[in-house]
Image 1 (tube, rainbow, N blue to C red):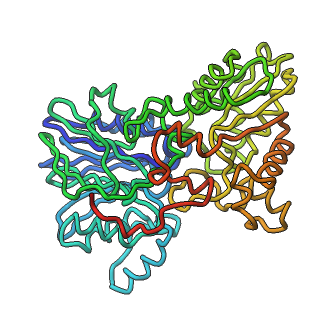
Image 2: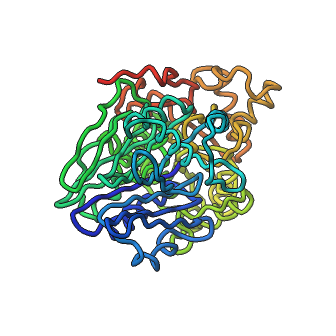
Image 3: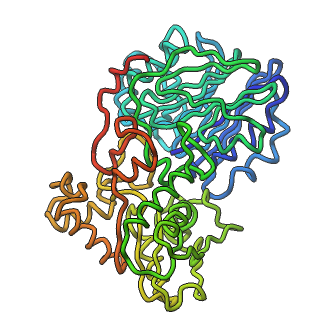
Length: 476
């Protein structure tokens, strides 16, 4: 997915920029970048790979080379960023959290207009540069950003560092969040509100869907008001979000605990203890323990000193090995016990199958999986929230393919939790993963836990639904 952070202050912003960007590290695994603007020195930019190291170790030694009172940072799952531009709009830098599905089509259109693309990485088009080119086609930044909204298929939130402040623009349907914070003499905007407390920023408000805001050190100016429709990604609360973050004023950890409590209250499975798969399964497990009335115990622990969440190799085989190395089962807690474990989701199932096997090897009598969202039946066309290259990598689609002879057949039946097809698929997932039982959160329960109406939350990966009229979004 990726995360972005920007800050502007009456004095140097470098330390806030460095740590604020670092607090978005859990959102991406490929690259990171920083850019500052100094009235005398101009723009200073640095970009590093995160595939073999962590954000802080990459940038810490070069912080003294940055100067200025405003800057942007990005943790990217896609292309090298930030992009620095000199155009008729002036000098500026841009960072994005985006998934642009029609990248090649837009590139072909721009090349026909004799525009050029220079930021090529491994022969791939840099989608942030593409966003900059589309911005440049406007007479103003607002007009250019709306050009991005009109042209792309997918989603795009962005921060633009100009000589006259920072412009924050949230995706047209608000699929990815941007939160504004303030402290004396400074403003900040971030993908994650969890970046604010230790830097002494107080959350002000979320940027609305399609809204465009300019931040200066002494104030905030709305350049374009929020749009009428919203489709914020439900998976932010399920998996991506840091527990202390809030989106639309709704805290991630509270949603996970509410989710787990509801499932625990409705579950009649006999068990001795519940544990959470770190990190994103822990909140659900705490709620489940309360709702079911059984103790929460740390039957599996994450080895944090050398395996932080942000370290995720691009190679799938090595990624699976790292996933296994991170988690250490505790035999003293597992042996002879009927165990319920809570996890955020099941994508391929490879890692989970290994976890289940190790639980039994360490003495568990029964292993029951409880998942905090419905089965992932549809791939996401809006946000790159998994490393899957194809919908067919999803365990649900492999099961459906084996049942139907066509992995895309009768998907609506398998996505509905009251059908024989759904129950058969869930039982087969349990069998393939070696689970005693598995249960998934019902979509209605997840939405109740989030506390937003379905029309404002994107649930496409669960039920195939999404608001399609992306360019028919009137201002409020």
